[in-house]
Image (cartoon, rainbow, N blue to C red):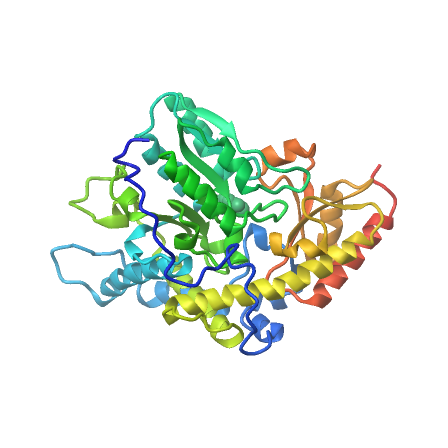
Length: 456
Ligand SMILES: Cc1ncc(COP(=O)(O)O)c(C=O)c1O
């Protein structure tokens, strides 16, 4: 890739303790035992009669998020006047300050030192299409993109379109099937002299497998040595493991607030040296700086307020149930502590669910099915039941009050490789507000469904 887009790579040493495989191995003890009732008290939607196992499609939000959105619209509704030559109204001043705070919160969430590296957008898909087009301006015919077939199509389709437009070559990273994992050495072997982008997801939104943080860092080292950038879709991982762009040493990382107890917003961290040289593709505002160059149109500022409140909730969770993360400022440390507490709690629920599913005749878990493998996966479990279509199983679960989805979840490449295109799987997405009793009740429902007459 053009050196203007990929400046000579200087590895940045993680300033924090190494969080290993994206923090998943943290063995620190909690400050106070995790209290799921106290967690659930923050989520008004959990009292409405539905058991939510649909977090991978979007989690529920804490009351503070709802209140902040409403308050912003009621009291502070104004467009931004950043850089305008006239006096701000109180609402405009509030919006301007909120914009800055939300970029800082995004940086804290992914462990970036510079809020100006964070671009806020409508959702991950929109950001991915926009950012790939900007990066694509520096690519030449014959340059190579390495894509992961484990990914959501939002992390594939934008690259395929770009490849078609600019005559780029697409190659697929080799996953290990049927485990649905990606290991560093096979990815590193795939990187060639014409590789300019290595794109992968940190976790599969369909089957829940994670690419561990050390593998990502090893892939990044090899990619950088060949002059390629590493682009990571962290949308699914973001709700389940702490993210640390410096430890991962990647160049671009995208996530969505609404998968992490926030409102419908997408976010994208871009390494500063790259962000500064990306073409703006924006209206010709007089000299907007940093990430604002890449943020098009007027965003939903009320959702910024909601996201800020969600981050406040996560920080409460980290302070209350997490182990203080040594050497980190509280804005970052409490988020890391929260995600580590979430990870420990969810791992217990995931192994409980996997053990229950293993006892159901005809139930097949896709990917990592062994409870002993919870450290290598998110608590998102994909399954099929012999003789029943995934749609019929999900339908019956929904009828009994469990929000459980079926389908391909836009993981088309993976489903095709698993021979499940079209029908897909049943997906159970555990979140940090679910309980062991909910997991048991769902397992009983699935056992009933498995025992019932097959679909005609
Ligand atoms: C792993 C993954 N990547 C990307 C996306 C697309 O995100 P968004 O809905 O913010 O466009 C999703 C949505 O489900 C996802 O799960």
